[in-house]
Length: 535
Ligand code: ADP
Image 1: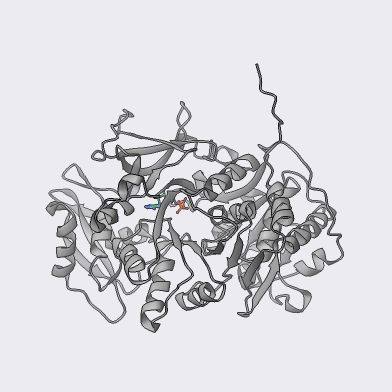
Image 2: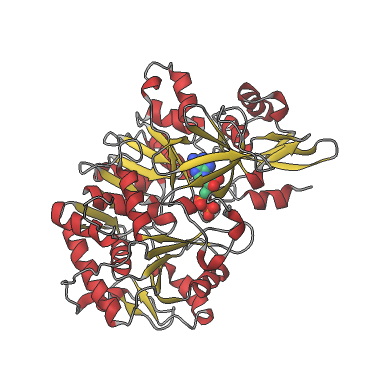
């Protein structure tokens, strides 16, 4: 017997309509390229999204067409998110930090028909447009007066939407329709496209707004540092509309000073970004004796949260940090480090240990760990194995059938991460499969070694890689980016590592790099370091 409940498809446009109706006067503040702040409301955002929807239809965009963006976090990018998916087309977000060859490869693979881009990315457009003959129009996110001169024939976004009506009835269609396409950076082989649906996006936003996930509500002012060009800014654009939060969009300036200024001016309560971003904000606050009194929490993900960063935020800035783990393939929320009642009584140092785990199970994402032979491993917090996940916002395959071997016959996605699961449901990433260091047949967690090294006050960032060794196959090498002007001695850094890790995990040697190479998604490029230090 079926229940007698309404069957209403989950539509992204409903999020915007809700924000317009229930929280119409709540603000979205964006930093423009010239540094000025643009302010408007969710109601104005909805009106302009409707204008854009009308403009896209007039330009011949059909359901299922791919419309690409190369853009910062700004109000116009939000309008594109809602308008493109709202008419049943697909937003293909392109990471501008990729090199133009990869960008044109992705545009070709995605078969993008229109490209909307921030004027700062005009050089990328100039470099790729010859290779992308299928693109019908290149639309610069500006008015006619600011059109870049050297990127070929362009349309100005403001002109594109100006004559269009702001009346539009969002169509309803199958909730499994694709809405967004985001390629993983593809450290091995070609990038692979993850194709989100309206259903997965709305469910993910719902989960994200709950107290034990990102924990956001109407009273929040959210600084979305995590880029809209990578995993939809962790779903914040949708979750904020769902709850009616204020959105603060930093545009192109992601340095510590600009972010700290925006945080204080817009009274940000919650902020989300990768550890390197928070390191920049911390350094600015320390150097200029700045505090961030409005902030009630920072979400950190994308790579492991170093203990030194966690302690600095909690002890110096009085800002609780909440770690989360996820991937492009998981929309991205996979686990979140929200406290349990049992943690109330823990002494400070024990609590820090818990907070350094990637997070615990949330409803919607199931996890398991397997050994090399595919046998499921116990969740004892001791053994680690290949982490697999499944759930309604986890990818079931890649765009155009790529990378099928990442998906198991019994319906799980193989994350490529190596993890342990603790009895209370907390998951602890020990490595990415490709970064694992195998020394004398045993695994060394490069993440643990890096985190311990970062406990030295003069280490800004650290990368631990495996290098060939005649006796042990591989031994760890530590590469350190010192705090500017410092040179932490090897013995001291190794003492920090010995304090936290097994003795044989202490690296063979340590070298300095003034600046570690950072990839397009804000992570240290270990591949590059491995190539450099292989001998
Ligand atoms: P890409 O693969 O394109 O670099 P993703 O954002 O999809 O980008 O990267 C996902 C990976 O990032 C995860 O598989 C994991 O290795 C790493 N990661 C994400 N969050 C954390 C975290 N909190 N701790 C450790 N690693 C993390």
